[in-house]
Image 1 (cartoon, one colour):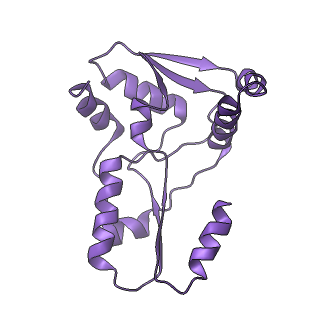
Image 2: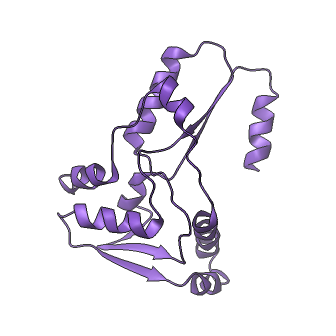
Length: 164
């Protein structure tokens, strides 16, 4: 469906800008969390280039300044690549205002539970896709045109420890 939507936009004749962001750091404050636990499932096989919402927003805002009617597509990635396990540990280590633990479930268990819950089924499929997706670094053009991100996962974890 996503590819079809992109194709419709491209073929619409209307000027467009499409952003393809990597995984957001903010997920460590919501989606990956249950209380003081960071939740993971399965084995993350490849590095992801986590981007902060702040850096993403800065790049989107910059696109409004530099683009006129060009049709552009941008891959949006952060400064550092981490597997989900590495990123969770980096976040846990530097988000010191809470004592966080990392909990990991077998993906097969989530898939089994997903037969009883549409929400868990959806989550299991998303996690499996993220764990297996070989994200390669492709943001050079984005950084040249819209600016390089500045927020590291360590800095993000430290910043948000002051908020919560």
